[in-house]
Image (tube, one colour):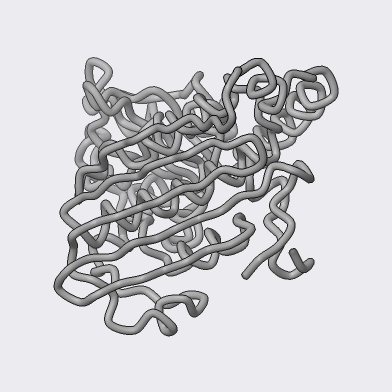
Length: 312
């Protein structure tokens, strides 16, 4: 694997951590009926630039220092905050992978996002780019300790199996266009491989590759299957769908190329690096597709060196 193609440790970890792992949970809020003058006092006392507007735990909008300044300039009556707040708020879910938060920060240029719970859509936190960086640094420390102290290996597992040839097989179904479950299959695969004692750096590479493959199934198809085969010296992953197919594979492999619709990109998906990231994480990658019939993706990740060392 060349230096330019190598996935960095930070890139690996940003796929692992969730928004809820790194967000700030103690959020200063105001109610929709609070007066603008009261909001101004909060800005001065707490030294913040804005806050969510919450009613019984539910997010109603956000109000910023810019809104407060405009209210002062207009010299209007001391009205409720709800009259000046922004109601259509872009949010993140607490269970979203941090990589989606990074994509949305880059695409939308926001300084922070309000975080809500997916089940009841109640406010649970707020997140900035700095929170993600801080979370990554902490995760780096924890992972370093785990990698130094965890000596169980998949090879020792297979050594205990009395057979001429042995392999473990796992199969997962992915539903197309179900963004609420985006990353769920990759997370399950990662947890399974960790329990088998596979080297952490290999687990992360498989997790990234399967996450990108899972997202392609969700974005572009009606769904498909991800099959994982673990052998003593390698992991084989096969992804299949009966979707629309890829008209031009060479173009699809180019960095940044994407046919995702605009609404998908606004959600932070479909940036066009999926196949590139898969290629960086695997020892070998094969891609076959027939328009109108579907696509078949094959991945091979070597276990022998503890890293995926060759990229084809």
